[in-house]
Length: 115
Length: 111
Image 1 (cartoon, each protein chain N blue to C red):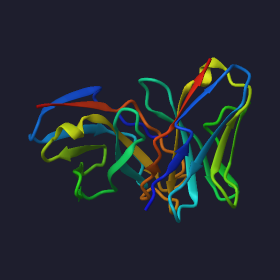
Image 2 (image 1 turned 60 degrees about the horizontal axis):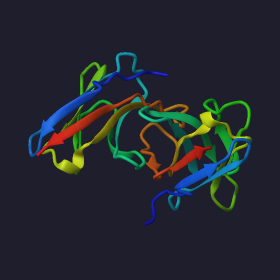
Image 3 (image 1 turned 90 degrees about the horizontal axis):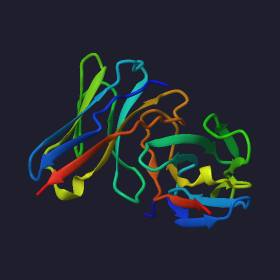
Image 4 (image 1 turned 180 degrees about the horizontal axis):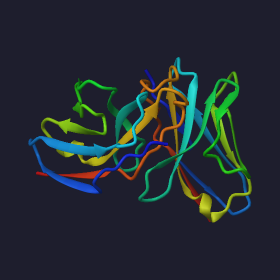
């Protein structure tokens, strides 16, 4: 039973380029969450999606960042015109249902480095 | 969002029990208490969760104070593989998409 798969594991971009991060949730999970982690810090919530819908994007920067979770295929976190401050580890988690009693299952993240 | 407070770091000897505390004095009645741990270069791993009663699973035990303003994660026999950053977070039953992670407790296990 495969866990949450994220790719790529490492991504290097130059300032001004676009970064596209992919997340395939666990089988049967229709709820996806994205988090960002800066070095030596905890995870910061970015966005929560259900299939084809953004439910909560209160942690997402207003500009340059977008997320989607299409009916078919992985969830995508897109960062346009990247800047040095976007360098971080980005984690995706999934759960089968929504609710406070639902554990989130995390992938091993994408480490984004901006040159 | 309700916040949690944890010590920055703790040490334990191998094969001894470890009690990791967490304060959450502003917890609301519908918040679940979750614990995750994170090893270097990996994503967080779910450990255990509870609402009011103490909980046990194969990884750990969770002791929840009667007033729910604090909880303790108990590792019964620490191993070197338990060395990680442990996060205590609150997940509301409403708007449960959003989980707020603090800085966690870095557990060091000495052989």
